[in-house]
Image (cartoon, rainbow, N blue to C red; front, side, top):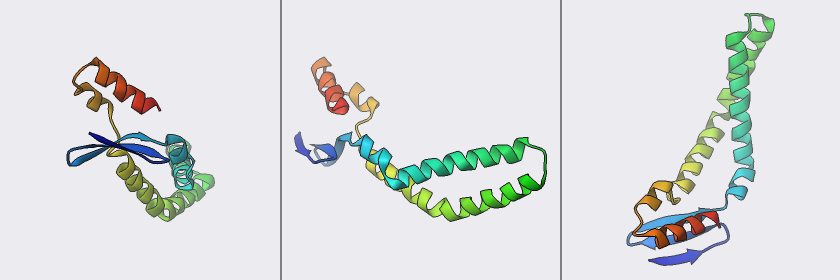
Length: 116
């Protein structure tokens, strides 16, 4: 098994498969796209819940328009972030990978690599 270090992640090659042992999560959470996606989810949830729970009024009619407009405008960037997030984390070492290790020493190494 070979290993390569970069500034944001450490990779381990296992035959033809590459596993990312560590991703720079702080950097990933601070990207503008991650912040915009988080904001999008909160705004859509709040406006959707208010439209559902509050009595129908002029304010709710305006919120329907705002909710729909924001949803349409931000659908592509949020989809892009979701795809990018999946591509980054799909090779990330998951907890079920630790279960397939050969012994306690290897498990400790996996946990240490994850926590670094």
